[in-house]
Length: 177
Image (cartoon, rainbow, N blue to C red; front, side):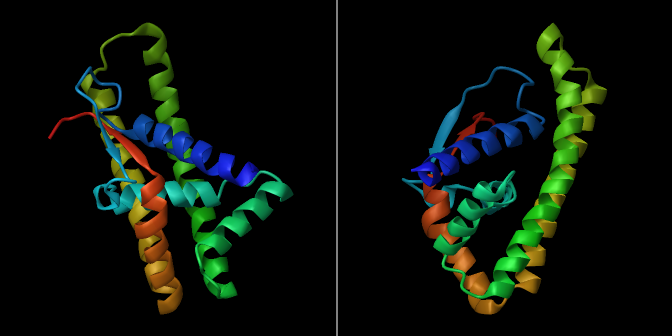
């Protein structure tokens, strides 16, 4: 029961964190659309899906959560212990990098949300730079997985991401091109 609750909560929290990192996240009111991965998993960008998955499997705070995450990794169909170790280690490295970025973004956005003032161009540029750093961290993690995991393990991970994980993601977009 707890596993079925943890995944949706983790996905929602991760989407919110990604939204916070978006330079367009709070910069104005725009039309929003919903991309539902259950209807079209290919519409969910790999970068977004992998960042959510890496956050999810790196989020254990205690032994019980670690067991749930290990069980979740087992549901991915990855059998090789070395591939599981590589996936877990990559997720932890990713978490360390993005937690630093999340803290910086929160420090910028918290005063804004309290004052409702217009975001200065320097702040917008700083947020774009943080977004670029976040994107680079995702690319580095995916590249590391591609390089370090066995071919069967990587193929199973990609299959899981494309067929199961993305199907559970709902993505809110701002409708801008």
